[in-house]
Image (cartoon, rainbow, N blue to C red; front, side, top):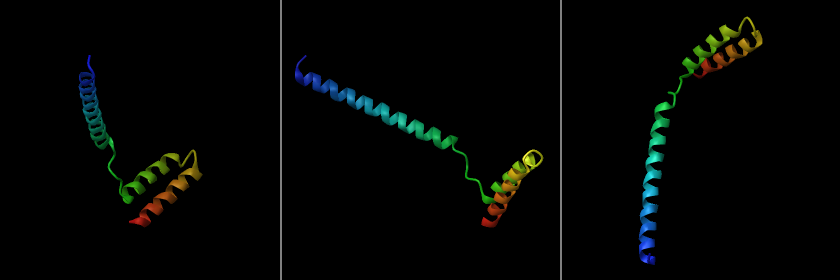
Amino acid sequence: MNQSTFFADSQASTAFVQRISDAYAFATAALASLLSPAAESPAEAASRLRSLADVYSDGQPSYAADLRAAADRADAEV
């Protein structure tokens, strides 16, 4: 194999690998955007925190109080 043929094969391989890499990056970014959760509003966060506080209120009342305090802070942001 002469040197110019080797160089052409090397360039083709590099270009192919670059295209595969670009396609993989695009597919990964698209999948990540599909799987990322929607942003939660402060009111939704407060509601979720209060629901969790109700679950923990019997077994861990201090943790439930912390969750309710966090919910109150989220309500204050609205």
